[in-house]
Amino acid sequence: MSDADPALKPPLELIAASLRAERARAGLSLTEVARRAGLAKSTLSQLESGTGNPSLETLWALCVALEIPFSRLLAVSRPQVQVIRAGEGPAIGSAQSDYRATLLAASPPRARRDVYSIAAEPGPQRSSAPHLPGVVEHVVISAGRALVGTADEPVELHPGDYICYPADVPHVFHAQEPGTRAVLVSEHP
Image (tube, rainbow, N blue to C red):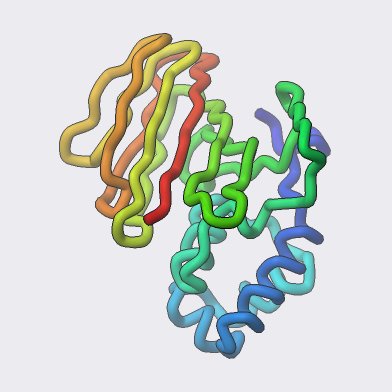
């Protein structure tokens, strides 16, 4: 999961346009969104102009501040029949661990879920701050092994194992084997 691979770079123009549109929709100033997300105003300004290299944590904090699902930053119009090959799709890496989330399906109108492909390697765990109230995550491990779930009670999962947990509390994904892969479904109330 090298950042040198251009296919693994975050789609900066798409993220920038989405951030500008969502901030305008919410009627919030650059200063207010940055304050709510715990970011410097200059960082948000750079992201809205399509520069910088945002981490998963930074973008998630912005989504919480804007009260939008994460997928709204990465969703692009897709045809009715959709195929995303392994290694394709908009991917965002974590700043704290070797963990990459690729949006596979954004929640359509009146549906409240997003689907991600997860690729993770052993090392520091991916710790997530609480998401919006009522968010629930579902994870199925397809390869490798990982500790997944709420931060205080993660569960070791193997290929084929499934877990569902509240994501409005601190939660973790910690790969225990190289090549750990999973599908994560995030449900929004």
